[in-house]
Image (cartoon, rainbow over all chains, first blue to last red; front, side):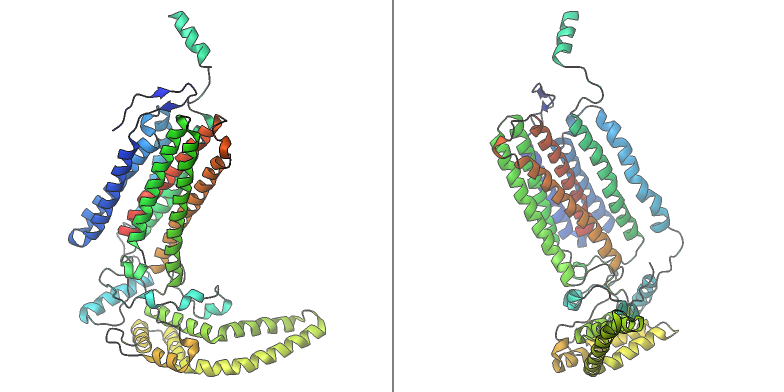
Length: 170
Length: 333
């Protein structure tokens, strides 16, 4: 696929014989794979879907980084530059996740309360018309916000909006 | 041996630091900060999503268009391919070929932005916007009243009247101006009488929603019933009150029933944050390629042109790299 023997042009630029067409083909195959996994997502566990989809994304990113961005042919400076960046990039999600995503306590937010009541109600009566859309238990047919076109011509929030604007705090 | 070393040293002048052009080192340092910039957004999105059970994933609700997202992925990959071909041509001193590939890349960037605009149009058209999505039945009722108020023109008149009354109280512009404003207030009052007649059509509904909100008991069930009554049973195609209002008054013809979307606002915020900043980066990439193209037929005469194209290419590949992760995270999972 690639020839790691670089040839110098004498101006500091190394030329590497890489079959870019093959890399492009691999990237296209990966994209098609992502779409296939999406089409088959109903028939596989969610965890497996996440691993497969993100696995394909990591493969694509690796191809772009190694060959299109020529990281494979760079000297050791790439580690000095990218390693701290990678560590710092991971810091934010890892710092926030324990409090926001993986807490042991129940977070009391209005949306959560409504969802809980709604899920109970929908279990009791499957045809409940008051169901809140978006929860995993609720799917929407052709009656979703696709028909809610009224807001498209809204003006920016006027002071009078506050009369109706009691949004729950997240 | 000593002679050979001396000859080599004479050919390649001594320099400090990393053995790559300064421009390229600068671009890589910048890309390092860009990596942290985007991972902050993507990480925040992942954390918020994991912490929000019931996150909207149904494409009928979110109006996410997987086909167009997939097509955009292909467009960016193809453009990245064209960029490396341009860089290759530049290294082989085929400057006009390089220029053609850069033009092709710019065209693909325009296609990408066109598709993104189409997706954004869908979001705006369906009001999938931060702070505009009802997340509960009560909020859906209140949004419906707001839409009805906007349709009657009642809210705009009330706002105008309040502004004028404030200006009159302050005595803004002197006596003559105050008199003029008082005349305007009278005209608005006459107009408001007509608007109140129109508002009377849904006044009962508005009062019930307001009573629901004021109630100390959880009003969700009541709000749901109200919304259902006004919207009608769409499953069985039974017309609700809104349909009757629409038939009687053309002002309400475009009004539809808002549907609550749990965590819809958080979804919309993160969606626009990530895709918006990505689109800005696409535009910046286009400007960088424009800097190469602006040289016209003189491209390649300056040795720095190759470095500029390489740096623009690195930036473009990074933009592609970000989209490689945004596509599965937003569109598929």
